[in-house]
Image (cartoon, rainbow, N blue to C red; front, side, top):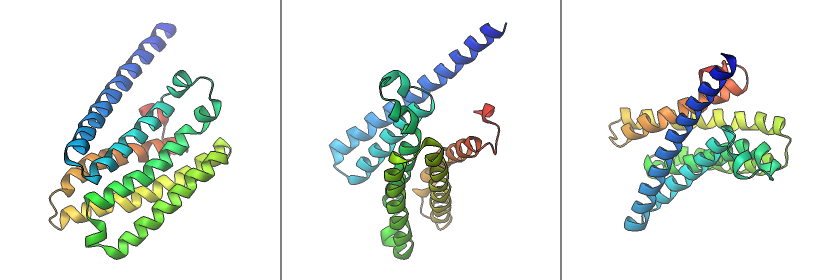
Length: 193
């Protein structure tokens, strides 16, 4: 009945988490191999993004309390710190992948300023209470989404074919981040996750 339903629900979430971590570790290994083989910086940027994403998912799913049970600070702050740090790493990856410095030097300045502000947010979130860190994090995430995704769409619309991979892959990622952010602010029901 109720207990059996809870156990089944937890079991399904664990399968989903396992699948997500499996795919993420495969992407990490693949891109790390490409980095070592080709020695191109973009693979390092993507590896950093995936590592931070793994930290974020471990935090949001409660795995940090299992992996580091004695580190209450990381358990409380990890979700915000990893999320804002993703803002920095994803922006850097986006700049490289979509050739922002070469194609849009003025916009590149905006992206670099955002990266500095997101890095400052990480530094602030280290010392803020979790509820204050959450509010700062929402701002960082929403601004990041508004800056990154429209650029990918624009680059694709203008004929830059690699941008279609960005729009597809990062579009799904950014949509899930947007959904999680809005749910964390009780603007969407969380049970749809």
